[in-house]
Length: 185
Image (tube, rainbow, N blue to C red; front, top):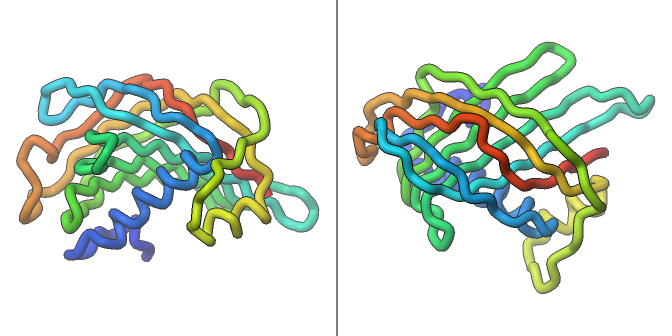
């Protein structure tokens, strides 16, 4: 069972995952898109980025792929964020939805759905100068990178959790368009 399957009591791992996805897309030149997210029945304007990763075997066949949309409420501090992830492997496919609030609250969806697709691909990713995260340089040395635009929808219900505002128990977005990057190995 992975971190995405079960949100553990402390949300640092989830927050690190959110920030890694956002940093990786931004480091490749993707700019956040403004999107409408419904939280507890109220529509709010959040930002979103998407990330697609495709791994191939030595014969060039796809063995694992995924599309992740990260929507977040505050551009400067990423106070509330939801990760919607659809993974496809040789053994099957599965969607994950994860909510991160502040620095310490994380919850996996108790129910929900996510669908997303790449609507267009663009130029090779740019490299943003001045970054010091060695993980990004390592990934960029292994994966080819192209700009993408995505369309995605998600609905998720999150369980009551200490520190989680009741309005965040229901989060959704419908047919949002977001910028992102595709990493291909």
